Image (cartoon, rainbow over all chains, first blue to last red; front, side, top):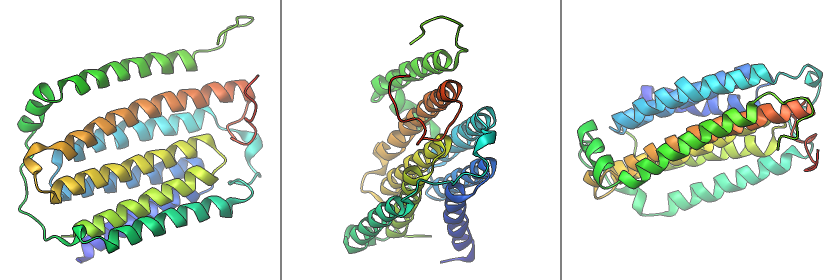
Length: 168
Length: 103
């Protein structure tokens, strides 16, 4: 393994752990953005350029900013000295370690994963667009509908509450 | 260049880190970040299987990852607005204080 890919691996896992364990929530959001950026680098290394740039646009550009805004809006002063995690935190971490162990043992024991690297496939934007417009046109429309509904729902949920009104 | 196995192990580790965060953190925003990490790990699996799979010209892994990114964006928007609504109602984002369904 090269030094570069080792560095990327350490950065990915380290920023993911930091995003889940730091005390300052803004630092957590920024570490999560670094993790998303590292995953985009992996997508580029796997010659899925379109998904890599979509990942940068959607995750690093939109979702990370949305998370930072939500943290700043919901900042809770009273929470300063309180614990970060639920009391029996060892239970949650134990479940996660169990899941990690079973997944890694399943991956390492399978013969599938030892194939040599095939030649780089070409996933041009033209080919992706053609697939989206022909074979996958129904899922594409459904995603458009879902995003519209999510937009309306988000606006409705975060709307300021009227005095005396019985809003659901 | 890494092998398929190392990509799968990396995705499994990322998934578990996200799961640990989503299960243990008290702040609702951090739980959402953990869920996003898990979704991203699944996307890495899709792309890795597409790259190493027998029929890359079908582009199935890429298209599934794109749709999953779209779903994750919608989920983040609705989840964060839910958190803002809860914060307005209960004046907190700690999940252990939000434990009753009725007001």
